[in-house]
Structure formats: C-alpha cells, structure tokens
Length: 227
Image 1 (cartoon, rainbow, N blue to C red):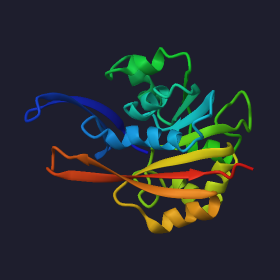
Image 2: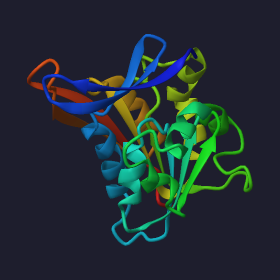
Image 3: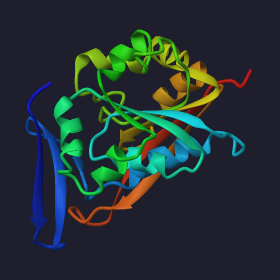
Image 4: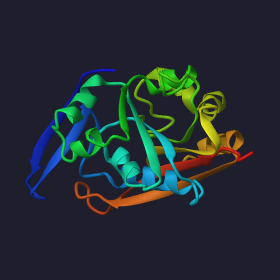
C-alpha cells in the first residue's frame, strides 16, 4: 500500500509531543486526534449486554493503539486479538517507540496478529489456530471511510456480501463497530441495517487544535441477531 512511517514532533503551539503515522504522503493517524478511536471501543463494547463476561474481541488495525487500549480497559474483556497488516506497526509497539505501548504488549490478554484483516474475513477468521472461531465483537479502524479505502481490495468488505461474511465471524448478539471519518453515511448505515439486526451511526465530536473549533467522525455500531 506504500511506505509506512512513524514520526514524533514537538508541536510548537501546544508544546506537546505529537506522534503521527503516514502512508506515503497520506496521514493515517495523529495522537492529537484520538477521541473517536477510544469511542470506537467504548461504543462497540457498550452495545453488548451488560451481563456479558469473558469477552473475546478483535480489533482490526493497530495504529497508535488507542482503540486496543480502550478495549483492554473494559473489565469484561478476556482476550483481545489485534490484526495489523503491517509488521512495522507491530514492531513499533514491541520496541516501545510509542507512549503506553507496554500496556498492550505486556498484557497477557493481548495477541498482536500480523495479517490482512480483510483477507481473514473472507477466509477462516481471526484465529489461525482455530478456524472459524467466533467472537463477541469486532472493532475496525483501517480505512478512512467505506467510500475512501486505503486499497481497492478493501472495497468489497463494505458491501452487503462483505458485511455478511464478517457477521459469520461473530457470536449471536455479537457487535461490529466501525470508525469512519466525517459525517454518517446514510446509505452505508442502511446496508448495515439490512445485514445486522440493528445498526446505528454515532457522531463523535472532538476539538481540533490545528484547524480550530471542532471536527467529527462517525462510529457505526451493528448488532447480530441474538437467536
């Protein structure tokens, strides 16, 4: 998909260290903007019944680790599998090049899995040792949005057929949550609603110190039928 890079810089206005991930010339993530990544985990796991325990969760896309760490903060979580296509990103965490990386790498509940999330969805799932294993929740933050993907091979995932394949990897009552840049896409929400028992688009706002004012992202939350 291109050259992946991590950089740390001192923001002269905010007087804080900023960590940024770029793919080629395109910005993927910044530590200045993490509210929505944390909300992805919280909103997704909140859609599971409060009585749920021993949750087995997949996070698609490691990035700076904010979604994964927010998932670990849920006391119900039993295992966390983080699927990351780029081995370099996993190594950044293992080498502690990112702040708080040890919260992930030292937690015995966490598995960092080098692999293609989208290819795994089409095949035997997210546990190479147990094909077709089902999970309580899948939290995805890879593409900018269902219409703005990082690679053409991802596009079919956001269709009804692709989402049905993903739903097959979830337990009854399981949750699929997706981060996307910008405002809710009503057409995509409708596709989710035809595939899952329920589908909701949450607008997540956060301060933007670069542009001033507020920016917004969307977290989609879809739930498999319980029966």
